[in-house]
Image (cartoon, rainbow, N blue to C red; front, side, top):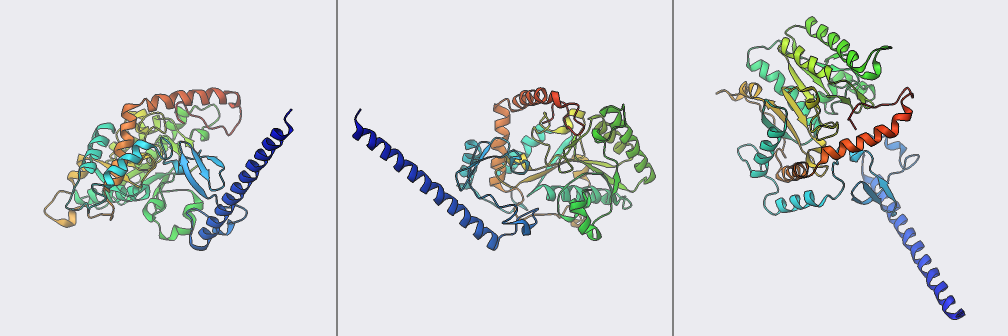
Length: 402
């Protein structure tokens, strides 16, 4: 045995180990420095900042690839929450990134009042083609809360324009969540978010959630949904002519604890809204774009809402963008010689070309790959794996949703 060669190999291994240790220490120091700088200047969302840096230290992230995030220290983190349910195809998806880069070289932004551009028009055409039939117009905004605000205002204002000023109330579901701006927060029923700002909020009528977990002993999810729909109809009847719209999250109340309900509730809700002359606002901000097994959750009930709110997965998780899809009847209510009867709502970045380009690239992936089919296969595997836990009281599952 060549003792000299053995010693050299051992020395090289020791050197590599030392270098690796030094690199790891440098990365940790870099992460600690970024964390410290962050805590000196930033205020994070949905966070009690007194919990930082302990007991919940911030996680400094360097980059993302696919389903994984890489920390400054080199550790890998599975992005199981899809970065607040926005990411559909993985971080740094090259086709979406390339579409944004190409658009940035042509037109990064232009005021959308009095101007238009190809990405906005093409995206609206695509969304209307894919959405439940009967939706005819697209209004853009920046985020999910803004989309809900727009839908509420459109509903109320359209009735006002048609000579029904008495319709000033909204119905929302218990345990629902629709965002953090004042109008959107008003429609939510999660005390942690709502209680503090209650004096500032609208006062909707809250209908009992059709959550299948609330089923009575021996009652199926379908039967629970129909019972809750009867209670919804009673609220409409008690406030005849007062209600603009029912606002709900189709199939899944996400922030409320992933509470799920049978599609039968949506069908009855559509019928009840029609019978009482009110709008149905579907908040698909979180559940849209394949999250429930179909492109839009409303498809599983075979219904079309009057106003459909989209965001989060709209751009594949790359850029902030939202859209409100409206029926022709709502749009037509604003057409008049008077500007006061127009929908004078705007955001600085309405119809941003970069966001539209990202959304178009995301929709192309749906069109060219069997995304929904793969999701259903994955959901089937998960359902089979969880079958042995069916007796556990708090287990959440619902058909193809997942």
